[in-house]
Amino acid sequence: MPTIFSHPAPILALGVALGRRRVSWPLLCALAFFAVAPDLDAIGFYLGIPYASWLGHRGFSHSLLFAAACALLGAGIAPWLKASRIWAAMLIFLAVTSHIALDALTDGGLGVAVLWPFAETRHFFPWRPIRVSPMNPARLFSERGVTVLYSELLWVWLPSLALVLASRLLRIGRRKS
Image (cartoon, rainbow, N blue to C red):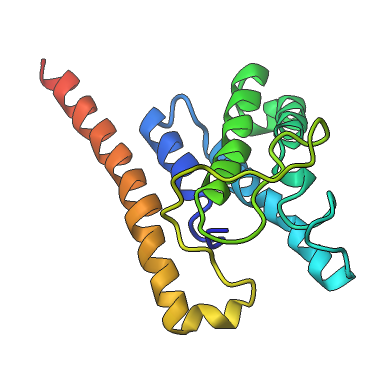
């Protein structure tokens, strides 16, 4: 999995690119939360839940069904997020699926149970450029941690930044014409 710092980057970049009129501050904060939420399943390591279990890491909380459930929750709290129900649901679904996609792009672990409960098979993308983050946060401050952060910079942060910069340049271009 990418680190907790990188999971929100793509959806936050999209939120910033869409602008404050389309994505309120409360919605942007919710998007950051939902982009990280699937990794709450990591508590299973401390509870003795096997990694390969549907309750384990990258199990049901990394599925499209979980993303849809989060989207329904987002629709329910949309008034607090200062967004329409459909808009909140769509963006929260994207936030969770961005997490799933990033995990499927990593080079380690068991893959993601994206189709659970219809299939318990774990999946990766064929191309996996992102180094898997160590589960122990202390290991982030090691040589391996530096390698992980570099791969996230290259494959998550730079594309996210490019999206924000491109949206800004488009806005500037529209104002000048």
